[in-house]
Length: 331
Image (cartoon, rainbow, N blue to C red; front, side, top):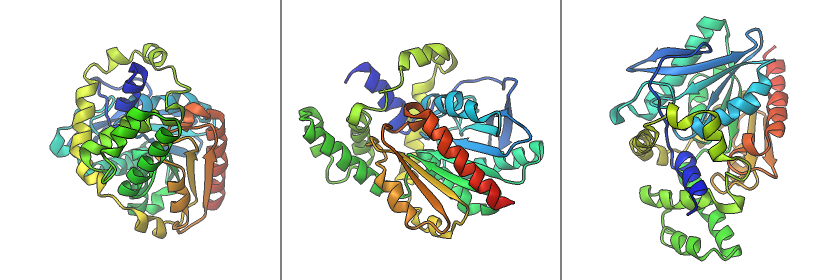
């Protein structure tokens, strides 16, 4: 596998987490949540509505958060107060041992962050945006505290992990067969019975991140790493990536949040990329049928798993329209 795709597969689709030790910078906060400290970067218009972004992974700050923050996020900052959470054990947050990496702890972390933002900035509620794994986290938090969430955005995500794995398998298999990628076809045949199983998912991730042009089509990974000093800031990244993935996978793969959808009524945006073979767009399109409130489904034709990289202007426009609708509803 070429280095470019190996790097992407590890950093984005194997539920990875990167970590750096250190204190907050001028725009960040280190806040206590249970047994750990979380890094929260906050920037933008303090008089504007609050937006909290939850990255994928779990714990993938480098490609799951920073490209959003430096493109779509910065474009929104003149009008919104943007909050970017480095999740438990990831980025500039403190390390988290495997026993502390639980679904409940991650949901509690979001609650602690929301309370911190409420007290510090006087915000009664927020627009919640979750990408990939972050979408699952956002959905669970929204169900636990709907009064805190003005609007909900699920981006390149799903609600049932086994269904997601099956859809990813089928989309990737179809790509491999159509393009006569024999190595992928053979590898995928070996996991066809249960693509969601632990090691099978890792095989699937290798190929789903390459299919349909790959998630790196519009991202120069070496240049991005150099521009943001990634190797220097995240020297122990790969070890923490695998630790987070292994600690959370058993809980993650069992998730089915369909019942959460039916109980939520805040305005929702479900946004996907049509080229995405990791979380194919039919997942969120199907989930929208179960949503209890108004939901707008957007499928971007030129996007893979990172629509904020592939079509940042379209993502920004979709979010602005969605936030404005949520703000009107809240009045």
